[in-house]
Length: 321
Image 1 (spheres, rainbow, N blue to C red):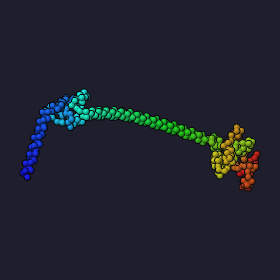
Image 2 (image 1 turned 90 degrees about the vertical axis):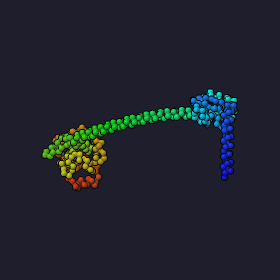
Image 3 (image 1 turned 45 degrees about the vertical axis):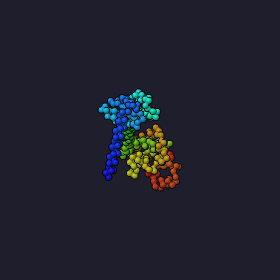
Image 4 (image 1 turned 180 degrees about the vertical axis):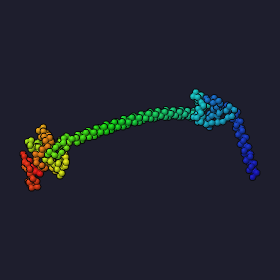
């Protein structure tokens, strides 16, 4: 065990002596082996160029302490050499072709990386600029859309107001027309003792039904038809207005066949109706029905003959009650 420890001590001592010897040779021959000093471009220190060494630069700090750095770190990250200084280093005879080529490749790599970074920065700047333009255009488009929507909304509101005003005007006009229809045209003292109120609507309805039923008859024939309408107004079995009587379901054929709507009231018919309303005379003897036999079926004519009493006949019409 003691012999082994003794052997290790001797070995360590031998290695230390050899290390000191080598270091002494290094310090003695460092300038003789063609190594060169160069001033760093941006550093307050000196660099020692070491051709063919594993680490090609040795930095000598101001305090004289020597420390080594990787070439890649110095060139890529610190950029300690100016281009002229670097070219001078490459032309030094101490550098062999392989090491010079490595340095040149390293320089190209560094420059290419710088160019790529510059291109990337320019691209980023261009993208940011394009994005800014896009944002501005998008903002302008959104603003234009909001303005368009506001205009459309305003147009809709204006159209709605116009439509509401139109509908209101139509309602008012309809109300006026309805009021005009219901306005009293005259009060008939019919048969000398019974009053019949005739509105504007009743008056127009009486004109049309007389024209449609007896427009081809003479004055007396048209008066008789007007009397039948007024007689029904006073009868409890029928509606109490001219309009109600005329439009009672199934009573007058001109309502069913459209002759009432097509009727064009003549001046003579208007004069006849006005005379009846003015005089108030019942020339139909209380008749509530009339029909034209030649235009009526035998079955319906038989009903008139058997169920009713005939009170008058003129032209094509026969009158019953």
